[in-house]
Image 1 (cartoon, rainbow, N blue to C red):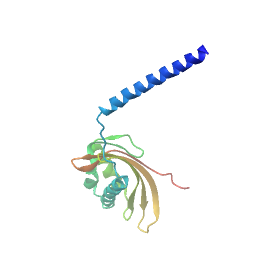
Image 2 (image 1 turned 180 degrees about the vertical axis):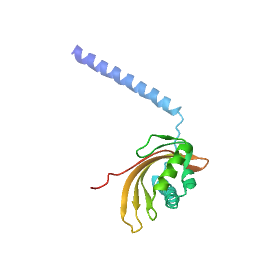
Image 3 (image 1 turned 90 degrees about the vertical axis):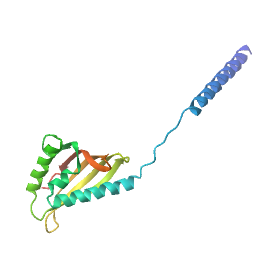
Image 4 (image 1 turned 60 degrees about the horizontal axis):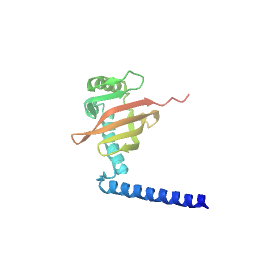
Length: 169
């Protein structure tokens, strides 16, 4: 009988202690200011990034290195296909110019944004590249990832990496 009474007293003590701690926690939360950030509409953000990729595509197809370079931040880093890391606009500019010089007349490139992750200030994009010849035949495909940052109201690429898919044999 004593052990039953002792058990009841112990349970009552634990319950009282637990409810006091819960009340203390409730008081702590009531004094804490809660802030929220507006939800990012990723579909709208994806459309916005795709529109930039469409401009990039037009610049690539017209071999406009200056326009392509303008998509990059001054301190951008590019991890180009089969090359060392390119740091800063000057190194990226040389790579762009060399790449455009290799483009065969009549070939066109298409960039397709597959996914975006982030918010209104920093976005990571994944996408695919398709290059076709003048007849529309696919020459090769590739993939890329770009990190975009809003700078002075414009999206700028701060990091990118891209490479070609394996050619079919």
